[in-house]
Amino acid sequence: MDFFAGAERLMGMDDRVWRRHANPWSGWTRMLTTLPFLVLAIWSRVWIGWWALLVVAVALLWIWWNPRAFPEPRRFDNWMSKGVLGERVFLEHREEVAAHHRRAAYVLGWLSVPGSVVMVWGLIALWWEGAVFGAILTALPKVWFVDRMVWIFEDWRREGRDVPGMEAHEL
Image (cartoon, rainbow, N blue to C red; front, side, top):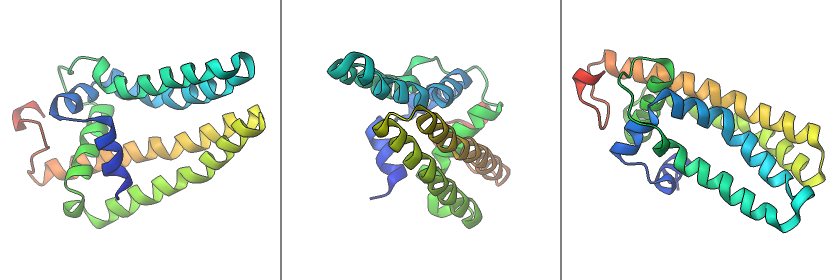
C-alpha cells in the first residue's frame, strides 16, 4: 500500500476538508505543532503515567481535526495554500506529475526517517535532547516537501491543468 494514499484515507480528506486545509492557518499550525505536541504527549508519561495515553489521544485528535479547524481561505495564492493544493495534485495524479518531482517527494519522505529514529529513541530512553533534535530532523524535510508541493502546484497550473476540488477561477 502507498504510504501517502493510506495517510490521506486515514485522515478522511474530501474536497471540503482539502479546501479548508489550504487555509494558511491550518497548514502552518499543523506544521509547527504536530511533532511538538506528539513528542510532549508521549513524554508526559514521565509526569502523569498512564494518563499520558489520554494526552496522546488528544494530540492525535488535533492532527485529525486541524485540517477541519479553519475556514476555507478567501485566496489560495500564498505559499502554504499552494503547498497543500500541490500535495493534493501529487496524491491524486502522481503518475502524471513529473518524474523529478515524484523522486524528490519520496527522497524527502525517506530523509525524515533518521530524525524519526532519533526522536523515537529519545522518547523511549527519556533522552530529551534526542527527542527534540530528532523531531527537528524529522520536520526539516517536511518543510522542503511542502516547498516541492508548491513547485508541483505551479507546474501543474502552468500546464493549464485543473487542481482537484478547485475551480480554475479560484486559483
